[in-house]
Length: 493
Image (cartoon, rainbow, N blue to C red; front, side, top):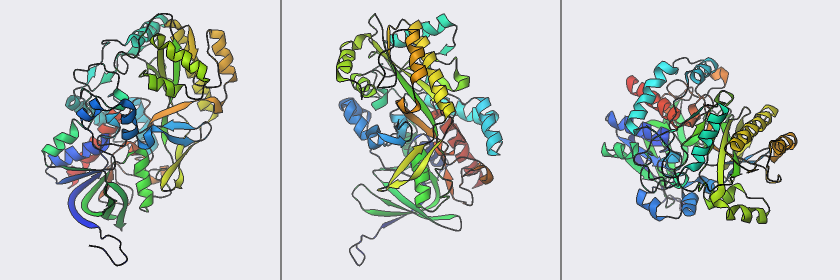
């Protein structure tokens, strides 16, 4: 049926609980609500892919299909930062490394002091993390078939007296296929797509992929409806009793703004982890393409927000890291691929990013990297270089396309003295804190139940609610907070 003028009349759907987004936070909401006997519908804008799909699809095609903007979202500023997030059922858990770290008591205490809410400290969050750990079957990932780059890094850390650790991952019978970042083709990684969401479906939850949520209608702090469009462009209108939004650290504040909810504060601040990628050439064959994502992480400088680990090395990934360099240098490096390793140094950004507006309906992201950030990046690279030389590297390709290869400590010092903020080539795959859980006078968007201030039946339960950047892979933190948010909601109804 069409209205006068040819506009299609929206299909009206009444539901008990509606969840927008199916990543780490939305999947928790779906499963816990379904376990409590609630009728649940999950809406996901991206596609649904199976393990069989991932096994038979070229990694480059998976990248285009599973990442928003094919993984090329720009955070504008000096320099421009490449930001990657997933766009699929299961969210970023489909394309991350399956890392599961518990937030430290120090981080949770710092967040509690800043936010004005004191009940998300370790005594509350730790049991939630233990529940996630048990459900997903967290393991300590030992060195497997391959991973010589991780072994070299671990031995180098030990030679320097630096602390390192095997990663904690949610995998079962990992086959070390080195395709974590484009979707596990063996089903070993315990993403939300193969764990929480199927379990929620077994309890009656409905998952609809290819559905874009346009806005939330509301009156006097009560959600009245959710307007969406399906993959064929047909308009839908959901009328939920309770709405949980977990559309991601960018998608959640964008949806709130489009809906006239906390327009001045939602998305104003966005915390990021920044990644420096350093390519190292070794005199011996490393064959870093063999193995899982990584099996050693150097945590000696974690108090400064720095972590060092190998990165997935593939010809395509190496080509992306070397984009902008002289083609002859790229060809030379590709020819020596068996001798190369690629390493990621993660740094917690001290400045903030934010949603500056929209262009053609898409969010425009900008950041304000500070002088302190530049100093920390320089320090992080200097320490990474020291570690890689200790591992036996004979040449380093720094994360600046205009810089030549570095072969000595003196080369590194000269590079660090000359590098400018605009020179860094930075990547981020961790964003959070765009709708932080904090008191309104402290810049908070939502309360301790994840409810945007002034609302009663709307809850946020994804990375957006975190009060800051945890300095670790955030999946465990996101899921722990989501379990607590949903648990508190269920206690009140």
